[in-house]
Structures are given as C-alpha cells and as structure tokens.
Image (tube, rainbow, N blue to C red; front, side):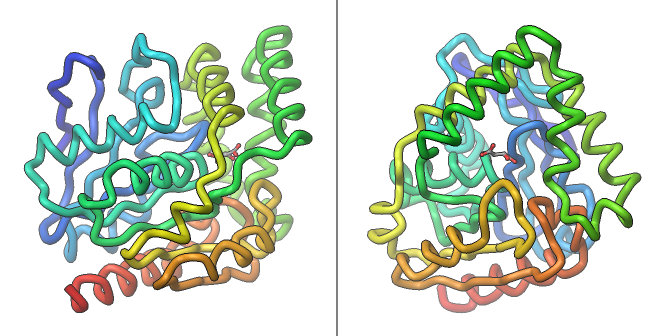
Length: 269
Ligand code: MLT
C-alpha cells in the first residue's frame, strides 16, 4: 500500500507500507528510491510491517522547501513513525539512508529498538571526498545528471557483480535518472555538510547492525569495521563478493541478515 504523509513540512511525500508484524523501516540511499528494496519485501513482509519511504526529492516524493540535511531527513522518517503511531521502530538505512539513520539516532533514540547501517558510515566526509562531491555537482550542472549517474552507478557494484547483475544495474540507473538534478545536488550538499556522528555510535544503547561489502568502493569496508567496535551492542556481517549494493548483489543473504537481526532484537525486548 502507498501512503501519503500528512505533513505541512513534507508535502506530497509517500511511503510504502507492506506486511504485518513489528515496524521495520528500510530507507534508501542517494540516487535511489523505495524500489531499491523490492527484493527485501519478498522475504521480509511475512514477518514484519515494512515501511519503505521515498525520501523527499526521490521516487514519488516531492523535494521540500527547507534546506536539505540529514537532520531534515531524520525528521521525515520520524513523522512517518508518528503518523503510524509506532512506539518503537527498527531502522535500516542504506548509505545516505544510514547517514540520516545516525541523525535519527542522535535526535530520536527513544524511538529506536535497534538500527542498521547498510554500507554506511558515521564518519563525516574527509576533504578529498568533499572535493569529489563538489566536482560531481559541477559535472551535473555543466553536463547533466545522465553523464554523472552513468559513471556513478556501476561503481556501486563489485567487479564480479557487474558481470552478473546487469539487469539490476540498469534498473538502478533508471531509478536514479528519475531524480531531478536539483534533488541530487541538494543531497550532495547535505552529505558534504553532515557532521561526524561516531560519538553517537559510542553512546547508543540499542543494538546496531553493520552490513559491510568487502568490495565497496563508496564506503571502504575497513572504515565500517573500525566503527563496528564503537556501539555497546553490535553485529557485523561482511559480504565477501559484494560492493555497495547488497540489496541487489546479495539479495537472499541480506534478507536473512536483516531477518535474523530483527528477530534477535525482538527476542531480547
Ligand atoms: C549512497 O549510496 O547513498 C551514496 O553512495 C552515499 C555517498 O555518496 O556517500
């Protein structure tokens, strides 16, 4: 079911609501929308109530007037939880979705039973990453988003996956091309200015899942391993052949990991 968020801040924004059970949020990353999780829905909908938003500016959701930031996106997820009257949620974020998950953990830890970073990080961008993003913004402005996205999307897959998941990569690109240049640039500015949130990881009391792609070009796996020792309770899953997109490169394995982590969290409750 597609649901509209009733919010003066987030006008014309939507999320999918599928399945039954405890609420589990799956939040997409940059250049994606809710459809990036379509292979997760198949296996997880029988055990959980899945909430899968289109972030403002992606998929069917309108970019909002306020300046884009991870905190704004965390507020968006919070408003969905409020609209659904959820007391507590389990929140998973892919990459940029993980950055906003960290902002959510900082502001709304009381709403979390647990959370997961799927190929994501609590580190801020370093100077080199900021520079690369600024160059990408210029590329989008000068040559258009197509040139940028056609170069970017294959980089989110391991060399091995590139040979196997051609269809998934094409779908991924189509999804990304559906996002306006304005929104892509707004996300990049928001990522450039996001703060380091490692102190939040060190403070959170809820369990944290790290899903790590050993062949990830966007979030080097060693960075995730460093962070996995920070929370009081953490589970780390390393996918040997995967790049940045386990949702497509390791569908069944990711579903099993999410399912097991949620069952562990709910059993402890
Ligand atoms: C994403 O997948 O959300 C992006 O790779 C995040 C980033 O550029 O840091």
